[in-house]
Image (cartoon, rainbow, N blue to C red; front, side, top):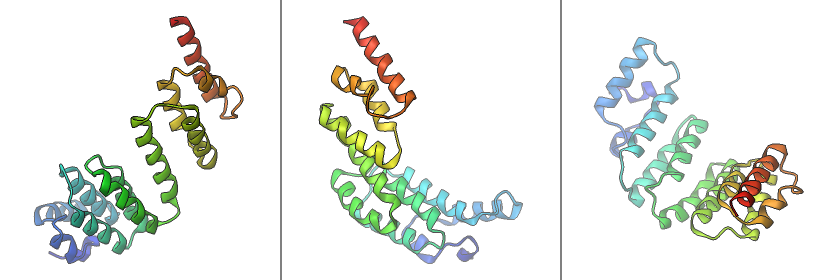
Length: 188
């Protein structure tokens, strides 16, 4: 196999992310001219391997990160690492360990880490006004409203919903909160 033709190294085989069948399919696709961006083949291999797993060992995470670090296309590698970080197969301990290693891929990871931490907390904790304020701070820092939209959909706390009138999140978010509040009042 001429691994370098698609930007692979022998470690892809050694770490069992790539096998001959997948490689041959990709070479065939490349030769047909269906894709000229060879980084797409490597990204597919990362994702295909990750999706085939029901659980993942710490060594496999280490190998995955090593391949991503060594890849010539760091934008693609960052996307592959993002998929690993968001994977539901990670244990809590693996998630926490990966959080520390993720920063090595650049500043873009800060937003991802904070958002994912808040998302996990939202699933486990009671939605308090203080938690809402943390999500609001995230929105203001990163201009990402998805956590606030989730809070609006989940909360029945009038204090939180009323705060959207003055929190400067924008008309769309304010309207969502107002509609949710009106619905709760009608149901009461």
